[in-house]
Length: 434
Ligand code: FCX
Image (cartoon, rainbow, N blue to C red; front, side):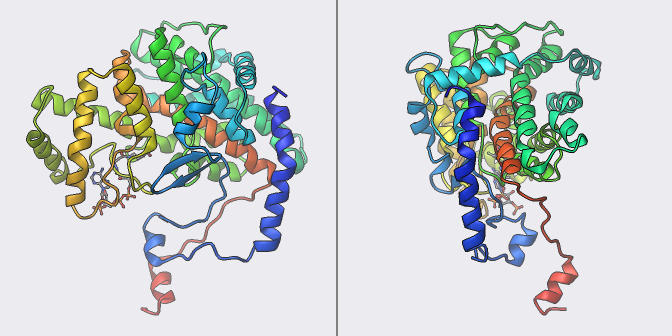
């Protein structure tokens, strides 16, 4: 079939069986223990979430449905043969577990195009926000404004049977994914281009239309956007945006509400906003040290950042312990398309200098760069220079992963999430120190 929904329906019975078996035969097996340190330390390393769409290995990085990024660059269909992967193919993969054919990926593009119109009231809500409203705040606001059209919320109101939750959740998720490029582009055009919107081009795929509606029509910018939207799609379940979406969705809040919650989390500087912060920081380097600083100068600059009690944005990770393969992938794109671009050279220089210093602090568990250290370089090269907007592009992509998992969560009947919390007194008592 080339119909995503039909392919998803085919994938449901075996998945239900596997979960049933897991719960019935192995429900009492121990996955891990929880220490006091973990409970007070942001639950790092506690295996306590079910997430099907991707899995993160600390050394190797992310795998989407078992496939690494280089594998997907080879296997996922592109807009043209040998081109960058189409995010529509990633959506098919995340939802069904199967690598799509080119025909299947293109049929997803068609399906999304049909749903892509952004309602007038959403445009009005965006236009009414005070100028200077952060683009991520605008994204959350626009998504919440869309919620009035939620098919799941309406179905729940009508008393839909729980075995059928997945269907309106699927419809809402596809509607939302389809509308996100138009919304993101409207935010961009309102904020930086005097509010002059650009119509979608019915011949273009989802990511190329995002670039087009933002006002960028070069082949390079479109390919970059396809890759960008593919690699940011998912990063397993425990990161703030995925977990927030998952948590809120578990209360049966519809996909608009749960994704908006995820985006509020992505807007934090330790998470998705790090791509904005990286650019600001790198510009700070350029301003103070010029375009081609020496390693020595860079080292001093990094130390000054650390001594000022700030983080070096784009470096470190809560789970990863090596260079993020998303970073490596975007670096590869830069090597192919902009090898002599000064900003790329500067970011490459930082790769040589920063990890060593972060290691010397003795406390940073992962000194290596993450995706946010490199994504901005690509955007800058194609003229998308407004870094306050960058996290919106991350957020549009993240919808593919968190909403796919959201559909599965409702299909599998996962319960409301409600971990146990303890007071300091209760913990002291528990360890016999009180
Ligand atoms: N610069 C300076 N200090 C850093 C650091 C960095 N890049 N990374 C970690 N540290 C510090 C932490 O702040 C912490 O200090 P503290 O003990 O004084 O509080 C210490 O090192 C130990 O932290 P660690 O266990 O290594 O890292 P965490 O799991 O707590 O945090 C993040 C992980 C990603 C939040 C952290 O590395 C960081 O702040 N990095 C910079 C921001 C960033 O790039 N975020 C994006 C991450 C990701 F790719 C994404 O979500 O998009």
